[in-house]
Image (cartoon, rainbow, N blue to C red; front, side):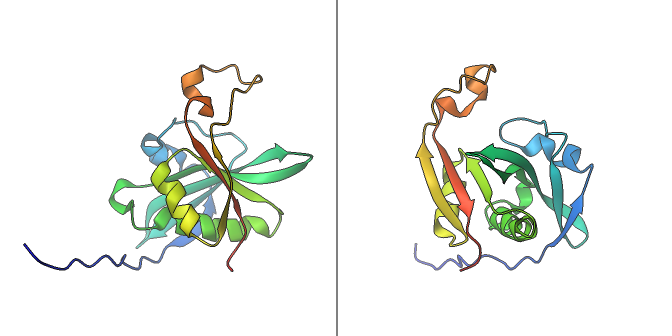
Length: 158
């Protein structure tokens, strides 16, 4: 069978707002857990008036300075795989950079990491196992010590 397939992603324009209280709507779709830090700054992206993507940030101490780290990123299943998550992170990182010098994210999702590696706005700074964290008393399966992770820093539009 011969044929062609259109691999272009549809252009979806989202409106992003800083919000609170939307996490319960998105929590069941998060790949690790359903909790959110009480101090998280939350953003929701709306398409045609409907919420479709959630992104939150927390403060994260790192080598003597504080950075903002993407805490939760969730795209509703109907909108996954077309770049909405990275688009949301780029939009919210621009907002966060107005008051913070360093924006980062750590993920263990290989496909998402590959997408960020192709995106010029994100720079890979570490890949592999993070090692055991002596301060983390949670069960090993709930930490990143038993899986590959990728850490990125937002370097902006270039």
